Length: 328
Ligand SMILES: Cc1ncc(C[n+]2csc(CCOP(=O)(O)OP(=O)(O)O)c2C)c(N)n1
Ligand SMILES: [Mg+2]
Image (cartoon, rainbow, N blue to C red; front, side):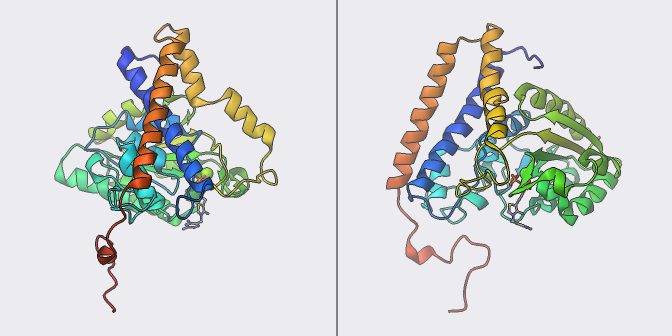
């Protein structure tokens, strides 16, 4: 792991990763106990990607997210209460309960939103970067997407535009090895970094389980993107611990239990960062355990709050949505 100097920097990243894991464990429980409408896609296992990148961003920088978006949302600064309210369709949610898991957005912290359309956020992030460039705000945009999204034509359109106009955008591909129930190496020919390089875009592969490696690389690239040296492409090797979505429980027909155990036991981003922090003498295991327990309690309190919170009034059903139904 690459070294920073400040204990607070390390602990902030550790806390954010633990917050994502705690959020997801509670969201999964809400689904399993039939308290949450619809389904959701768990980010557990991929925490070092969202946290390593978002920790390098300012609040005014923009991100776009995916159907697996809770981790990005937490890492960009969202609060548990409003997030759980959103998942449960409650009025106090980030989108007044009308977005839910797959359309959660947090404009104040620069999260332009999750997106149920695979690859759908690529144009939005590139547009945000163009806007930042034209308005000379100095902001950058990070576009999170999965390996499966690299099959979408939009990516090639926006890479062309971003490269020609030197837009301050980072395309961050979370390669978790699967697109739904299909292995990535069965659907993606050649190399993803070579695809970006074909547009003249500087591309990097990084271990997406190593939060400090992700953070150190992204900090450098973001500083360069702000100076007009973008765009950049990152391929982050990572793994999702759950099924494609919460209902995907029997997975052995497409990936083995041994493979899952290998990642969980030996490559867990939180566990490994904790071992490194204690090994370097930066913090004790007792302090880390205290942090984890505090965050677990916060998450459970936020769930209890959200379960009791009010739904939007039925008279608002047409409000705050993109296309109101005025046919009636
Ligand atoms: C345009 C579009 N095509 C297909 C789908 C169905 N779909 C939902 S998630 C998914 C797989 C996405 O894989 P990847 O981009 O690797 O993200 P991951 O689920 O691994 O995080 C697919 C095909 C969709 N939502 N949108
Ligand atoms: Mg994937």
